[in-house]
Amino acid sequence: MKKQKGFSLIELLIVVAIILIIAAIAIPNLMRARMSANESSAAGGIRTINTAEVSYFSTYPTVGFAALASLGTGGVTPCVPGVGSGCFLDEVIATNGAGKGKDGYNYAVAGFSLTGYNSTALPITPNQTGTRGFCSDQTGVIWNDATGGGTACAPGGGAATPLQ
Image: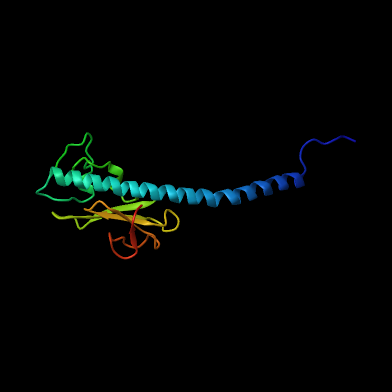
């Protein structure tokens, strides 16, 4: 009688079961870490937009604050500064990732005028790409809305609280 080499089916099934148990423990932690990283990136994006808006306002005081696209390069490389292309933001944030967002968040600037603006970063898929929405205005304070993130974040209003 010959001695067979290799693993039995039972041994292979036990190894696969152990790997599945480890994966079941690790994947939720990985998803939480990714959401946390997306939220940090969104808060940083709002901070960058605030800096770009102040720089744009200082450069073009008669125009006031600008739309998100006007803070970018206008699609021109190298960037030529002007009212329509301030060259203060990279194109990923300025174009909102060509409509697909950046790191799981959609960015927008609304209400821009000579006196102010309102910038927002909201998760593309709440509770998957992020749980909080972020917003800011001409005061430079970054607010976060922890009520699901899919709602409009209004600086100083509703459920929004200042970011610590």
